[in-house]
Each structure stands twice: as structure tokens, then as C-alpha cells.
Image (cartoon, rainbow, N blue to C red; front, side, top):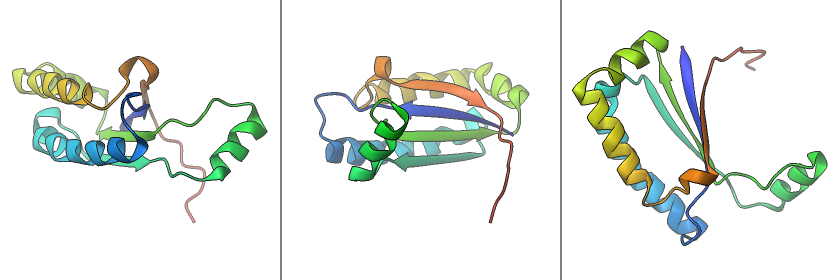
Amino acid sequence: MIKLVYAIRRRPDLSPEAFRARWLEHAPLVERFAAAMRARRYVQSHTIETSWNDVLASSRGAQPPYDGITEVWWDDLDALAAALATPEGQEAGRALLEDERAFIDLAASSLFLTEEHEIFDR
């Protein structure tokens, strides 16, 4: 399987609480379009507010954390390409992007495709 990882930063006009609530409101839209997108799995990981984030970032000289991560899985690149080639898949992409503009700082976020290499699962 392949996975889209979307590292998300909230729009600056939204509080962390408002962002998380709005992001959860986005989930039913994703689910509605799942078949058109041929998506197999969708997960939101919301960054928790803890001083540990500062400790972890400073220990590596890293940037501040993203506000969260979205993960979407497909069987393979062919399944993703096939979905994007259909009018339904293209409409899904347009609708999701339009909704994301309401709560995501798109220019400060990052998205990319990955392939998992499981090292351990305890």
C-alpha cells in the first residue's frame, strides 16, 4: 500500500481548539468521497498540547510541530491514479481542497506519498 501524509498547519486566524474541531468536521466529507477516491483508510492525528513538544523539537533543532497529520491509504499508485482519472475522483479532490481552505494554512503545510517499511510492531 501507499500512503499520503499531509503535515498540516492551521490557519493563523484559528485557535488550536477551533482548528481541531473544524478538522473533525471535515472527516465526514472525506468519508463521503472515499469510494470515488478509492481510498482504503483515513486517519487524523491531532498534535497534543504539551511542553514535551518543545523539549523534543529543541533536542533536534527542529521547527515547531505541525498542528497534525492526515494519512490516507491506497492499494498502490495505480489505484490512486485511476481514482484521479475519473470525474468523481476529480470532483472529490476539488471539494476536499475547497473545504480544507477553511481551516488549513496550505502554504505552510506539506503533503507527500510514502511507502511504509515496518521495523517493529509490538
